[in-house]
Length: 112
Image (cartoon, rainbow, N blue to C red; front, side, top):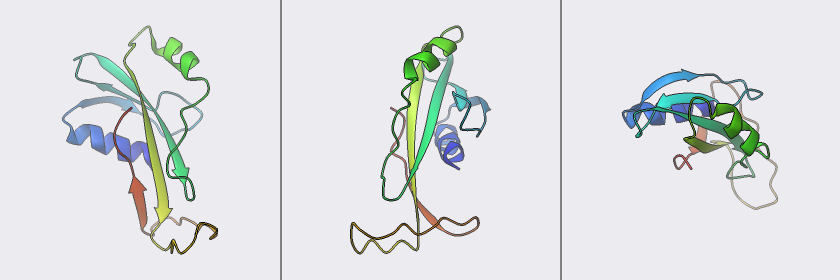
């Protein structure tokens, strides 16, 4: 889901997508032709309530080194999601599960 959010964002920005995949075990998640008019890559991570942002992976340098043969232009994308049923009445409330086909709120502020 998080990769789809970022992919849709890139398309709306007018960038050409080269490839994408949603397997969280494989980085980067997306390759696209960016502002440089050359390949650029994106590592996508997701977070769920109560977190409101994802953390850049600790192996960022290794990912960048692996991508360097094609491009040194890399980005990080944090996508946070929460159920539309989350009441937000207190900071101690239990997270409401996310269910396929049910609504959710998405927080994505762009590429880093």
